[in-house]
Length: 214
Image 1 (cartoon, rainbow, N blue to C red):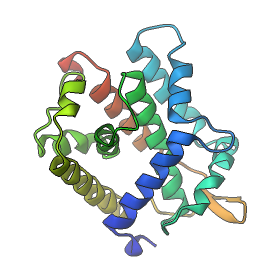
Image 2: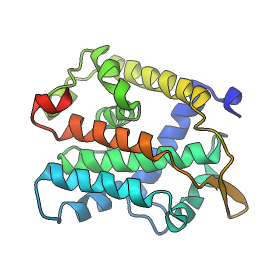
Image 3: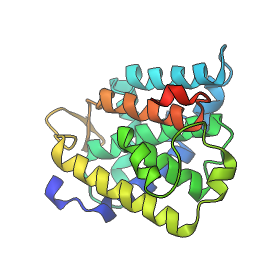
Image 4: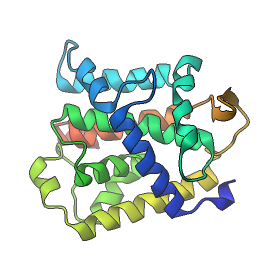
């Protein structure tokens, strides 16, 4: 299945997963609803965001959570079902963190930053290539300066890196599956990758201290 993936299919899948993250799936809150619930917790905004990331890493692979991902099976582009579920889980988490930081997650520019976070440790390089410094907390002013051409470059870089990752890291390995509504969803989410992606989002959207980015 990996050989049938293209950058275009990856981006279509991301857009579909993003929209589902905005509206939520049956039994699963939207990104904004999830963010609002964590913002009620004690501690700093960074503490709250880190708590959200920890939740994703401990709960995302449970059967109850995975069952809620059945709605992704109607994705209008053919990619491995567990890849779609990973994208949804990670996008919802990143978008929630962006909302916690005060950004409009319906804004295409914020959406591009969310996608950049999906590349994990490579996000710094992806953003540097388009002139965005991955250092202090990403300011709204920096996002406002992003042009349409820059958005295209970010999305192209993200599509390329995710396609490469899907083809080389075994993320499309369907050896562990959970049957759902006549289809399948991978039951084992790559928790290590999800943790890296979550940490990247916290550093980009929330962390104030540049030393934390080292």
